[in-house]
Image (cartoon, rainbow, N blue to C red):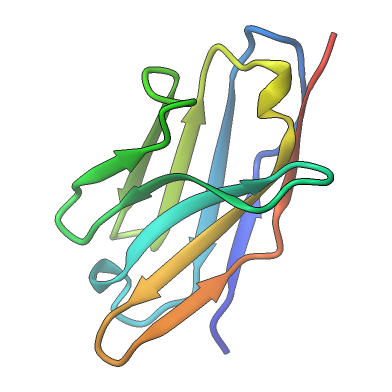
Length: 117
């Protein structure tokens, strides 16, 4: 049973920081592309950032320069460091794992991030 378990969400003031973690029970974790998505109330789920097998990263324009994704293949964990948080970052954040051969796509249960004063 594949599981992606997110943690680290919470309530933070504007300008603050949070670090999300996603622990994955995936065999061959290093071969998966990992990502973070978010979904705000009444909105569609959107891509935040991804990190490939080789460590290449991709960010949504709205988070560039503020968020950093990283992965630890020895711990089967991916992280999202979020700095300079804004109220518009408020959402449920989901961890995602994509394997290519065979095609696989897994999601975590999500963790709530609320940015408010």
